[in-house]
Image (cartoon, rainbow, N blue to C red; front, side, top):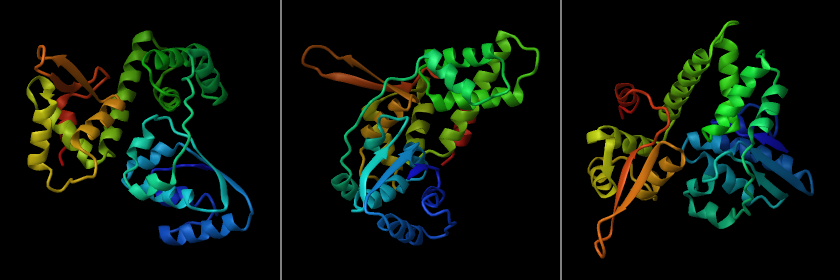
Length: 273
């Protein structure tokens, strides 16, 4: 079974049976029947990180799949190497113990070939520009494909390098806005604290203190520091450390990363939680 994960858990699980469900419990019951009709099964879950959009979706599905005796091999594919750190349910951690395999990112030539295979109505020089820019910025294939699709819809027949840069920035800003809108409310709160801090920088200990003052509705098994680490891994924040002198410890400062950000007023509107 090859399943491409969707932000909605129901849309993800219905790929096993081809049926549309309104109840996750009913869907899981049907999946179990399908799987157990075979003696051995291999399940491949692609784009697994998209299930992180809604809290608990990945935990729920992996809890079910990792405990299903008819599955011999469960292969999970993700563009985000930190996906394992997003599992919160201790029961899932006890049954889903994967062996991670890390593949190097695509180079510009490989990414160009992938874009070319998608048959976008774009010239080769544009596809190569997208591939090279994506690789130079450390972005992933999903971003490159999304940008190529965006160019297909918005780039005119005549264009300059400035047009490519302008549309690329526009796409990244719109993508970032969508990412923030779908983000876990605890991450939103942390971003809001950083954005509203002087010079958009804050010491980690002060961020934790401020978070704990206003996070009554956002309690979690994770610590604030772990959520900050997640945002850093996603490229949204940076954590800088500097020594306070011999025997005096270190200071950790949290600030915005160097990725293309929206203007503060737009971000704060999105982060109005």
